[in-house]
Amino acid sequence: MKKDILSLLPQELETELAALGEPKYRAKQVFRWLSRGVRDFEEMTDLPKALRQKLDGHFRLYRPSVLTKQVSRLDGTIKYLWQLADGSAVETVVMSYNHGNTVCISSQVGCRQGCAFCASTLGGLVRSLDASEMLDEVLFSQLDSGKPISNIVLMGIGEPLDNFDNVLRFLRLVNHPEGLNIGMRHISLSTCGLTERFDELAEQGLQLTLSVSLHAPDDETRSMLMPANRGRGVEQLMAACRRYYEKTGRRISFEYAMIDGVNDTERHARLLAKRAAETGAHVNLIPLNHVEERRFQPSTQGHMRQFIRILEEEGVNVTVRRKLGGDIDASCGQLRHRMRKAAE
Image (cartoon, rainbow, N blue to C red; front, top):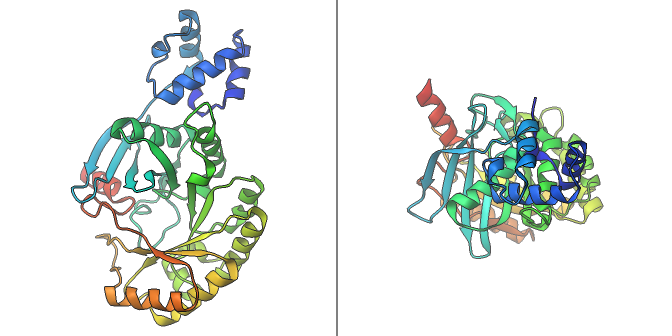
């Protein structure tokens, strides 16, 4: 089988090209072309034709195509549904802020974590994405939208730590100075709390932001919402968060979807404040996007205000995520799920 050239780092390309009898400097040329979004080796016009033929004979080069593109009339947010080489589809979202443009990418086709309020897990996990496929989400969202990407969040479909090796390779590719060169401090990785991977991630020495999808500060509520909590538990998660912070010096963010009557009570607020204090975490409250197949509803404005007041009284650093793309299948997985249902 042909190798996935898009997942190779420059030093790996050097080794591969040396095996084909090519000089090392060709690897830098090839890597730069790939980072520009060429769809065919023949587009690498400063390479000898013989080398282009060698590349075509030894490597595969497949780029995603746009299945659906939705643009919000409210705020210009763009949601893409990309078709991959095997016919699978993943979502990517481009959002504009005062500090630059952020792309939210998927790390898997579907998800096995089973969170009770999420559309991404409807239908389960199909497969994990290759590093090259995640890289193409960033690159082709930038090329198609015309918006230069300065920030990345791995917060789309899938659980990044369930695709650990490919995600690490993607991070090194997207951070490489000869490629897109997006700094690690501009990248956020969101996890539902696969604590067995926290220490391993900390050992990588990456200066990214780890965002923990907490959504409840107690085991009873969290296990009901998030099956990943079962067998781990909130106390184990908090311990892993503390170790990560101590090892990296990077403050963790708690993502917290506000669900009416489920996790938005005064009791939850005060316990959440305790969890944030013991880990040094920032709390990012998220107005829930309702999913048709799920029974949960977003918290009322009154409950949201009371929740914020309690957190602030307890000294918690809290923000509310600005809701973008509310008119374009805003919740992760909704567009893919709707297209999948239509095809059945």
